[in-house]
Image 1: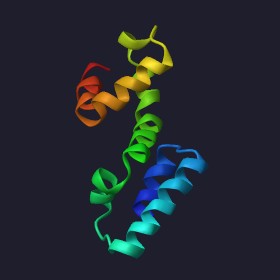
Image 2 (image 1 turned 180 degrees about the horizontal axis):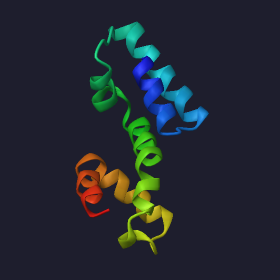
Image 3 (image 1 turned 90 degrees about the horizontal axis):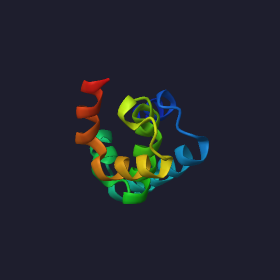
Amino acid sequence: MDEIKRYMKFRSVNRKLEQKVIKWLDYLYTNRQVLNEEIVLNSDLSVELRKDLAIKVHLESLQQVKLFNDCETNLLIELVNIFAQNFFQIIFCFR
């Protein structure tokens, strides 16, 4: 749990989202005895929480890519949701 909190702090996740994630993980730990935090981040969060985290973590980086400078925020959010992990590995190559 500490690693997840550090990750969210490092990525400047807002307090409201941070509390939602922590509350969900507390529930999982209590009811399912989840031990591997990486597995929790990758699969045990609800789809909505994963989307919220992905948007928070990746939107700012995506906005810094010249190709997307003139795009509306809503389009970028959709890109974050669609391409989540693999997409950003490619984008960072072009930065």
